[in-house]
Image (cartoon, one colour):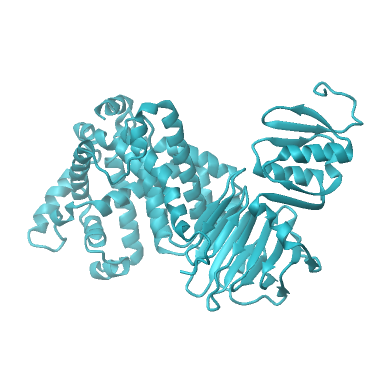
Length: 357
Length: 183
């Protein structure tokens, strides 16, 4: 039996949750508000539960056909109705009342999840989030006809406005085929780096080592800008805007320092979108990490010396075995362990440990 | 319109793909498995904690959306493994209402009616104006001579009250188990 105190506390959370729902739906939240909301969500699963309930209540009310039977406040005879109903409004509903309520629970729970997606998607029309899991590559056509190839383990948030097309790369890598529209520039934000294009093909990668932009076709403007100011000042090219043409690449460190523009084989750089991985003077650790994004079979590099060795080569993303064979050939590394899901690479200099064979 | 010859048929597909797990999830709920909002919320909560706080703050709604969608997708997947004979439910859409669902809907309508009538008069009027007449919050505030903030607060409180009166779990475990049998 749930106690009155528990119900009361649940009720308080329900009020808070409903207030958040309404706020999210009617206002653009400031960063401070978003932080407050996130902290509230992270404080208790009950908060999330109540947010779902609030969605569900709202959904039910919106779909409800019974409104015509509810008298307006100032309508004739409403006073009577009101006083009668106020009497009904006792501290706690009667037990039998609850018995009658039971049937709808399962339906309610199901509706709630759809509601969170449905209602929130509808009302928070702004951002659309595209994600890929490990091993998943995705090609998505956006509303304006632009096409995005999303590498595994990536996340993209799309916000289209009338005057610009904003895309935030939260992490990972994406190749953009931008549909031409000179009046509505296409802007990719990755950390503090913004890439502005009108109609072109370019690749943006965002990882631990910063952001890398590669142009395949056309021209883009790359600028640095604090993320906090991003959403509204999007059309202003930053003071340090850099123009990048076909087969050119620039990398920006997390600290915001850009490398000189370099010439690259852009087709090789964006080979991942067609299942090719190309590495030039890349560490074994980094290459293994990339393969692991694309495959269920995970490569693990035990030896730090081996992990730091640099390799160049071109591989099929779906074939980690070919990379392992290549590493063994080039570095003399040994496969310490191998099963259907793991390949562990060890150094040849290592004394044979318990797992070595 | 400028699809540039690259998979124009894919426009909008991802959106449908996105929703499919939810529909399945809903269908599964109707098939009578015991899982409720608290369970879903618990799982969403655990995943929210796995994210970096600052990352969440960038786009909290979007993250929440994504997490909830993943959770319900997995829920549906688990249940389809456990109950293969219910697979016909999994392809059914929300809109395709069976007679049983129709009965449930009617029961829900009735409960809503009682619950809405039990609200304080001003809250009820605000809800009515908002949902039945589609009056914006500002206009409701003006008509009732209160501030916008009060309108919002009243709606929030009304949701809270309705939520309590629509949730049978709050009366205890025994009735909840009985609830499972009724479906």
